[in-house]
Length: 365
Ligand SMILES: *Cc1c(COP(=O)(O)O)cnc(C)c1O
Image (spheres, rainbow, N blue to C red):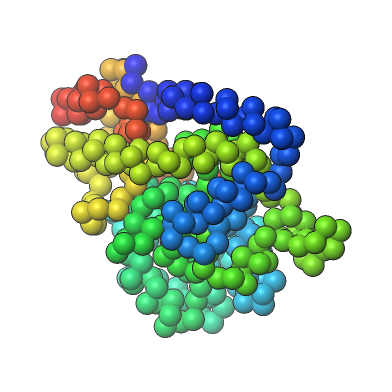
């Protein structure tokens, strides 16, 4: 069986390093907001090329905290609108709702699955305050167009970088391509913890100052609470593990890129549409997502032949019960994507023979 993603194999190679870090933390006896978190925040900020990185509990919280901080700064308020791609993972949209803002869905493009920048302006109203581009599957959105629109209409750009650790665009990393960015370190992501984790990156000193308190009960100084904050922190153990894995992120992404190139060059079945790659470099290849009208039968055929695949994602956000206010709305491109996409195995530990078997099977489908 070729598993879709073998998290055991990805992590076990760092066993000795993990054990050493865990041992050090046990001996120090300091578990929350300590030196490992600071070290990780400094290194990840440096890696992304930004001034500030703040560790939080997960990717959803990272996005929520950005919106909450902008509300505290008087830049956003309850009822304001945020533009977001209609085919994103539901967490991007939930973050907007959770902060009391209104998600405004924009269709993606069918070829690269990213927000269709030509359809953003028509959705802007006098309540629009931000665009939330999602670098879905690891490919950076058209940040030139998005930042130009944002500048014209005085909007914030908040990147959802949960799938694009290490991806870059014109020499700048994901996380440094807008006003602020949310990352997830969920175990399956390109930079994955051994549990939940997330971070915010930004060059905005004011925003960072609010988030640093907001994630810790709204407190800068113990027992003094400036904001009605929350508890959302990245713990010492996860920060230490992430520091170990951050060293391998670029080489891991290169291995993903090699597998993607192999798929792109060798899958030749006319029934399968390969993902469009917009630039030579900079794709983090979190997922390799093909499209076909026979998606369900392709998935079953691959599974019967020992290859596990996953659908990212089977149900469109506007078709979720939680968002039944959108039940009469129609996003045909997003719906088509949800009906046709299939993610093939891709990861830093997938071997050449395994990739070859997937290619051969697909070509024989
Ligand atoms: C994983 C993910 C999130 C949420 O991250 P969690 O750490 O699971 O909360 C947000 N947006 C996108 C696009 C994601 O893939």
